[in-house]
Amino acid sequence: MIKGFKEFILRGNVIDLAVAFVIGAAFTAVVTAFVINVINPLIGAIFSASNLSKTLIVSIPSATDPSHPAKLLFGAFIGAAINFVIIAAVVYFALVLPVKVLTERAAARKAAGQEPVVEAPEITEVDLLTDIRDLLAKTAVEPAAGKHTGDPTV
Image (cartoon, rainbow, N blue to C red; front, side, top):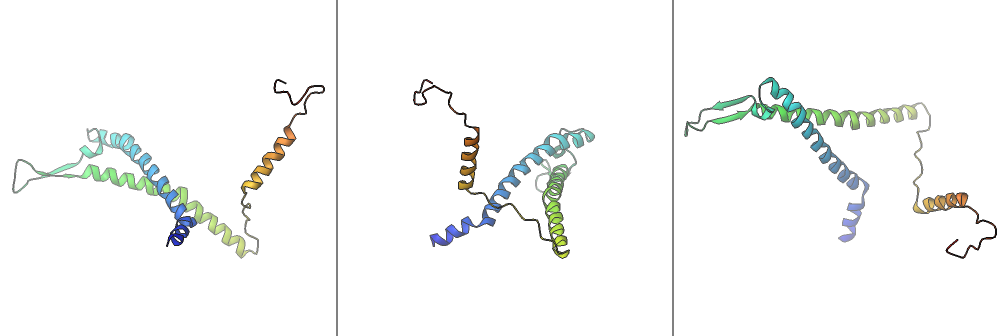
């Protein structure tokens, strides 16, 4: 049972989904802040209110308590709709459209008989450490002539 769970968690698409969820949540916070702090005041200024949630309020008289009417907050709904449209537009133009274009290009290359663009091979830790060692060896300075290299004060 634990082996199956480990395989599920380590599956690539689960990790990708988790990353997408975190990025989406962070991005939603940015867009919401933009709508609340920029869009709402601009539209609210048209209706002489501080933000959209305080505009376009329709009161409906209550049958049970006429002194407390029900309120329909159309301005708050419009603000949420603007928020949704901005998020959807950014997701489409930043994620969906580029992936679609790349997929179409790959399909066109395949149809034309060309080899698809080969991705760079995955670099392992050993490869990285080897490259670092080689770079350090190239930039190493030889000790000055006549100085004792074992002395830590040199």
